[in-house]
Length: 527
Image (cartoon, rainbow, N blue to C red):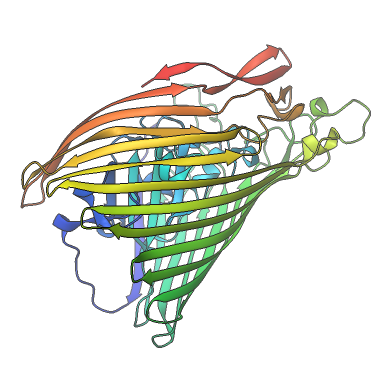
């Protein structure tokens, strides 16, 4: 059955004049941790500009990435209708999502059974975004675990010196109402609270989608109301940032964000209601996040630090009959699914002589996962501590040739230490031509639930129990690539990139028998 949509948008804005960016000098920060021209970035990277975002009606991050080369968001759809983000063929769990360089990903343990797209439905309103940077390929040297497929970094606007505000009301009318209309209201406002000392920004998005009720054109039978034909949804995301200019060289900032997603399951569209399937009639996904940061411009470089607290919770799941002993009385009780991450990041960027730009940094990460099924079977909450140190140097060998090389040492309480190196060359061959290439590595440890020595979940609408495997090894990858880039004075650009990705110890789910599954490493894969 085909369908057409008509989108309507009303925009109200008040702001200071804006000067268009020079497309020939696009700046990026994700590839190196500091600002540089995109043609000099040591990575295969694309940028979605603010103008490009304005021209399209995006409801979530995956939609915004739909036209980026090397990114596939159409190969799979989550149960709630969100699109999964795949970079160079790697599943969405291998893509690290950042906002202004701050990790957003929670563990996939909190969104089991096809609900991973919930994690990509959080995005600041388009009016708050300056640009989105997308790196294809591993970046574990700078960003650690999860950055094995690629990195998406949403760069938000800086707080303005004069108050600027915008509000947008959108409604999408489906030509066939069976596909479900949707509405979205978003706002962004920023300006000084105390001139030259204290700045404030506020942002928010409210999204509502009617349920799909699509029938097969051949049989007239209603199709499944999930995935491409999603259920009714009510979502919101509200946040704000306070920016304090301590002195001419140091700033302190505090960013807070609350978000809620609500999905209708009254007709068992997302999962079977009750103790057999493990679902309630309404599913909710909540996130509470707060980050404290400090930025310093020193005589010899820049030093940035942040401390973030991120808690996500999946509400509306039940403990199933198959996951607890018969007669325990726990089947049908609410299943707790809550993940808490506390992350401390610190990074120093400084020139060393005339030809080196050095980045030094470290990270501490405390992760806690609580699963009601594990607790019901006398298990404990999952907890893991990790710390890492990294160093990277951009060495200007010639005016037109730069070598970026570095490594990250990561230590986890479960697996001990691991080193993730990378090396990358960028050659400005001519004014319009750039050649890039190098080797980068990725590293991803198993989730806390995958390592649990006991029942850690259910699949098959509550009929199959999943057993963790404490003998799992971390996944790793080695990516080799070379690319040729062309751009002329009119803004026309084209590129060709060849890459080879060797993937080791991929974690897959395997069946033990008709009612039990577990996880195992499957060796090597090449893309």
